[in-house]
Length: 383
Image 1 (cartoon, rainbow, N blue to C red):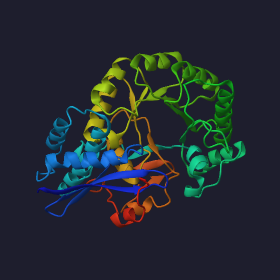
Image 2 (image 1 turned 90 degrees about the vertical axis):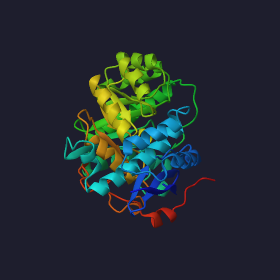
Image 3 (image 1 turned 180 degrees about the vertical axis):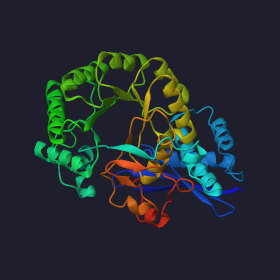
């Protein structure tokens, strides 16, 4: 079996591009992967083309060897966009190998540690506030609207959610560039937001708050102190400074989740050694399936949980699910309930989700395939 074609495919999710990789063999088997990065879709596509020349004509079933060949090709460009392009290709190779052997990627990784995976409803409220017209969802114009969304989460069966700082009817309030300061009025809004959600969902639903890179460490600690009465599942905060992040973790009672931005094993190692987080967020679409497994094993050695970072299409969801089903230290997995209305149309099989739990994929390879005609019907917004 030989690789005869490797190409990037892109489509719109309604406001940003999703990026996929298609690998075809001389036997007719086709594998798919995803490596979406909203900020640099052109660079991702170019990276796929550059790395493709390294493995064209080779046996796609030699996944680790081919991944090493591509990694050597990008040895002066470790991490970043190059790593993400590699991750998309690697996932497609795993898909082909699984199809060829008639087993799922989870089986290739050693077999499942669980039959189902707990999910949390991500970007709860923030997507509806920013993209309500695309999503066709109820607006978030008042705190009552936000509370209604919380009750919708409970009714759907989900037991956990994640939201971002938001202010009803003001989509850009927390999106503006800042110097990392936390203004008094903004802290009051964040407290009102979490208070509203906690009252709406009750004491048994887990709530996460994603601060991303928005604030300096002192502000994150201040937010954590103010939100302590609401018993958050975690606060998510990102920094490239290991000591700063470790300081934040030591200074707050709420568990700290971080590292969604990292794309190299040695970067995760530095943060684990510094004791910088309780939960390591791993972006499988950026790190690749095998490297994500290595990161999870390293996290386990430091008594750290892992949680797949997954705010893309169903292809990424299947990739994340295979990793999540194969590790021993999974905390929970991200999913976007609010997404492109055509997301299901893009794949042959959608994830099986019941009351916030996803069934571990068991069919050969990835477990789903792209509908390339549906992709073409939604061209990416690259202009």
